[in-house]
View 1 (cartoon, rainbow, N blue to C red):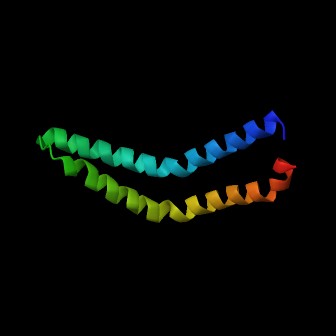
View 2: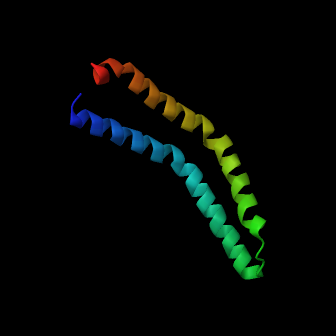
Length: 89
């Protein structure tokens, strides 16, 4: 296993992580922005108001994007395990 294979494997791992985490991070970002705009306009500075909607939105996003995320992670893991002899040997 040479350095090009290691870099390619790390690149695929980072890319998969970003692709899988991206939708949930975007959902949390949008909901956080909406909550902060709401807090700024109404001058309500409640700490739980910032966290509870984001948690709920991420859980809903996990339900919606979960099957796609799982299939993407499973295909990456299957690729790793199918080429394991090439990586080790």
